[in-house]
Image (tube, rainbow, N blue to C red; front, side):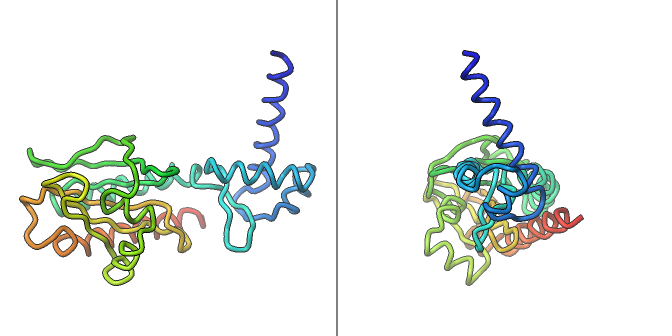
Length: 218
């Protein structure tokens, strides 16, 4: 028992060292090794494991940065009032989704005030790729093509009959870290979820990303 606890403490200590070494800048495995005093092989192996759990993320040049777990608190704080404004402007339920493995998790939800509404509580987990956010988070080619053309992707009754949605990516330095989704009963749709609300959803998603980027620069 004591030996297991010692091993766990050593691992936690190393994780803390790597997080402190990354801080808010990027670093290669060799640079992390220099900053922590650990071997390059140890740091590289540990950093890759931390990427899997969202503590670090790897950027295009192979360097490591703080992962989405640390961005997420700021992301949720920034998203909450923007989703509330979107809900007030459209009358429909606004949600923020992230990907975790082959599932998506709802991190923020602001429900419609209509009696008939699409609603899922924060913390809800759905399988990919169902729904507009699911298609986008799973990088479905047609969904990405729709975003490139319109700024949004829609779903009409694909996951739940009678319900539709439109989603747009939340980007941080050109990387999709979440999706903003507006979920609406099809009985209140005039043309389609995307045609009715897509521009508003896309603008709100861009606003979240922009405010998050500003916050990281302060």
